[in-house]
Image 1 (cartoon, one colour):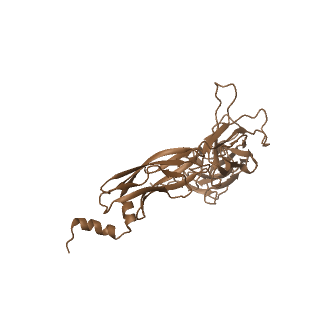
Image 2 (cartoon, one colour; image 1 turned 90 degrees about the vertical axis):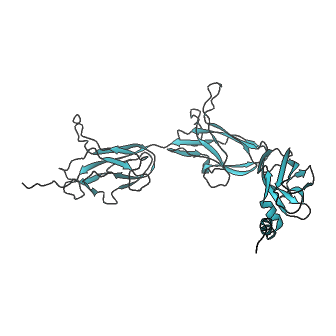
Image 3 (cartoon, rainbow, N blue to C red; image 1 turned 60 degrees about the horizontal axis):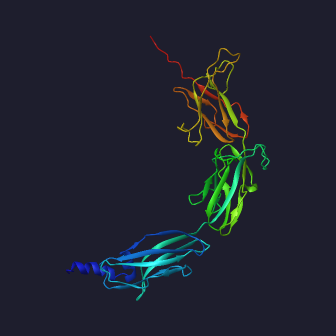
Amino acid sequence: MYRHPFLRTLFPLLALPFAAAAAEFAEVEPTALNLTLDDGGVHEQTVSIRINPFCIRPFLVDVIASDPGAEVVNLTGLVSNGCGGDESAFELEITGTADPQSFELQFVDAEFGGILGSIPVKISPGGGGSVHGTKWVDDDGDGVRGSDEPGLAGVTIYADLNGNGVLDAGDPAALTMEDDPETDFDETGRYWLEGLAPGNFALREVVPPGQQQTFPPGGAHAVVLRGDDVIEDLDFGNRALAAGSLHGRKWADRNGDGTRDAAEPGLPGVTIYLDLNDNGALDDDEPTTVTARDDPATDFDEAGLYAFEELEPGRYVVREVVPEGFTQTFPECLGSHLVQLGEGDAVEGLDFGNRPPAPRLSIR
């Protein structure tokens, strides 16, 4: 059966609830609102809706807030829209509160009901609260700042809004300051975290590598902000952890028994690496060193020795890049050493043994 093109367009609309069909084909301006308002502060906003020309009857349009508690007043009142691509504009008055707000401005059919279009709105309390403090180097690790213990710049302090102990994308954050030579006091380590919404949260730091937090106890400050509170002296203390080191020797295991005999020499020029992701392969960002050659000027044999210095405490997997033609004979466990390095530890004996390739024989 033949249908006129207009009817083919109209029938799908009639098959849906009319408000849903109209909302799908209306354009609003702006598409979203993000406002900052003081408690009681008033913001005037122009909003508009354009109802596309295929609708089948005019509308009497109103603008309301989806949250009945939101303080939104339509100063323009009801506007008739002929729905032939017409645009209806409204002047609104939006009032801020002490709490964050989230709702929609809804363009509604004032005669028959239904939402024709909507604008999401987020309102943050103006000004907000702030927290201040200092990050310092706690050299003696006692959790108390001594007069000779300096501030520490470049450390991230953040409001852990969801309490998960991790800096997330939506968490307010600030870096501790460097000293400003133009002033007569030292700003190093100071931070300001401002414009914070009222509420409760944990204030934390991102502990720099190689450091241990000594203050506050428990690792965070519990903060309660009301309105435009200013909270001072939320400090953080850290001490530097003593670095550790790993040492060993690479040797030529001529008889392939996994044990170094007196006559088996160290093997220089072999790459030893820290397999940080434990994938069994040397990656671009992983620390490496090369086993040493003997120094004839010394009274001991350095051939095959290696060391990794200035390592942070933690778990390390030490591996070698086995030279071509050689077969690894030691260590037996997955060909690697697994080390839990403590603060200031110097771990020795992380050796690697390889059986050299068999000599080629020729028959003449």
